[in-house]
Length: 337
Image (cartoon, rainbow, N blue to C red; front, side, top):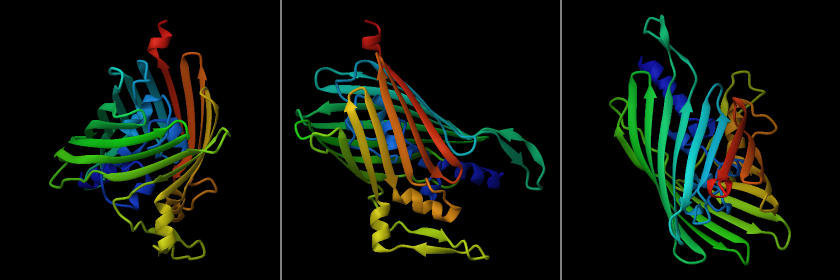
């Protein structure tokens, strides 16, 4: 049974890329629920858009411009893993906003095996994240935010509970089309553990930069992630080696670029965007698992139709194949008028 639990915990990591940077559980907390963030490499702490789903990128990205917005998102992740998110956000006075949400992840049916190898049934491991966030405008250009997350995990008879906090700040200069964001994610720990050992949360510090390119509809996005540690080695498989050995890579240049995500956004109007990004860390993580040509690349498309927003994101962030994310949201304030 302990071996089975270990398998479930590995599944809950949620991404092969996270597996190479540490042994923390709860790495599914790093998954975005915004197609726009998904298309920008999975991390976007400086993106400016009236999208309540950006709250998990940086709680300072929501504001009083939210008009009773409700959003539903879905993604097919690793193998038979299902990932869904439901969120609601609205203004809190003239200078604040709040949001609440639920994220759900199940990893499909798994077989229970006794120590002698006998199958004794099946179960579906799952994680639930309950979220509440608040942001406040300190000035016309500076905004801060906080998000609290309660995380419940159920893997057959094993359960755990954790509490995490995100703290973020965003500077946005509309005149220069410049956005800077800083977020500290997943501060906290387990309240109830699976067994004798406490699992660490994937604490991360991210810095985002997004700059409009002159009078064109293009914007450049650069995001620095995993800033709590410098050394991010990866292990490359040698296709010519019949012993399937792997070689460790940890040069200065490799570490530098494994911290950075580069993205480009085309947004000719408030009703349409197209994103393309390259995540070197994701691509090099896949070196161990015979990556494809598209590993490390991601893209997203968003369009507004009347009171509805539709978004779709595409990426190949793991060896299990392509992941597709879908978002649908609407502003109830507009819809009911």
